[in-house]
Length: 321
Image (cartoon, rainbow, N blue to C red; front, side, top):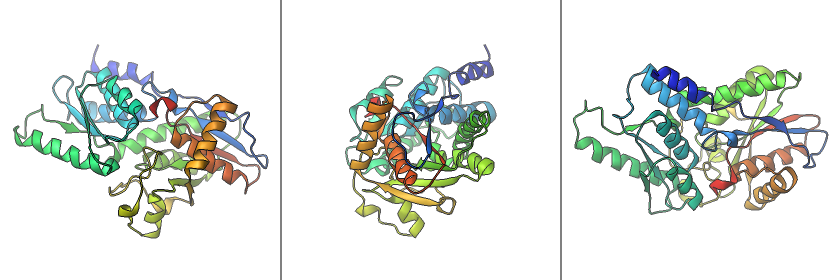
C-alpha cells in the first residue's frame, strides 16, 4: 500500500464528529446551544485533525519527513501530544512529546498509550516551560548531527503553522454542512483560546457563511486574551489553573488575532465546575474542563440574547483530567 492510501485510510477515522443541540439543560430566551463532539476523534480531541494534516503536509507535500527515519518532537499541554503521538504511531513515526510536569496524570497516560518518549518539566511554567525544554532537546540533538541528517528531531510546531488553521476550517465546514440541511445557522461561536487555531479555523468558516460573532473565553486566573486585546503583558502575574490548553502565557501565538474577536468572557472555577456537572448529569456528556467553560459562557450569553443558535466545541474527554 502506498503512502497516500495509508493517509486516506487514516483520514476516514478522523473528523465527521456529531453536531447536536443540548436537550436537557435549561437554556433561556428560546436560544439553542449546539455542541460539536470533537472528543469522538480517535485519540480523544480535535487535535487529531491538526496532526493528520501536519504529517501529511510535511511528508507528502513538502517531503521533509520520512517514516522510520525522521523522529518527531512536539510540545503540548496534553491533548496535542496525544494526537501527535497517535497519528505518528499510525503512520510509522517515532514521536517525542514534551509536557508540563504538573498536568493531571491521565494526560500523561493518554500520551503514553502511543509513545514512551515523554519528557516533563519540573516547574510550574506551564507551556512556557515546555518551550524551554523543547529547545534544549532540539539543540542537544542537532549539535551532535549533521544538518543534512534525516534522523534529526523534527518539530511539527503545530501552534505556529497555518496548516493547523486549515485543519480546523475542515471542522467548521462540517458544521456548515450539517446545519445547512436544517436551514439553520450559527449566530454565536464561543471558543476557548489556546494557540488560536480552533477559534480562527472554525470561526473563519462560520463568519463567512453566517456572519457569526466570535466570543473568546479566558480562565479568570490567566486572562491572556483579554490582556492581549488591551495591549497589556502581565504574564508574570498569571496564576496556575485547570483549564489546560488555554490561558498560556509568555509565548507568541500568531493565530490569536484579537481584532477578530467580538467579545471576551472570563470563567471562574465555580462557573466551569457547575457547567461540567450539568453536562454530566443532564446530558451524559463526560467532557473536559475547557468544554465546560465554553458552556458556562454560552449560558451567560443566552441570558442576554433571544432566539440565537450558539456553538460550543466539546474539545476532549473527561478522561484527560
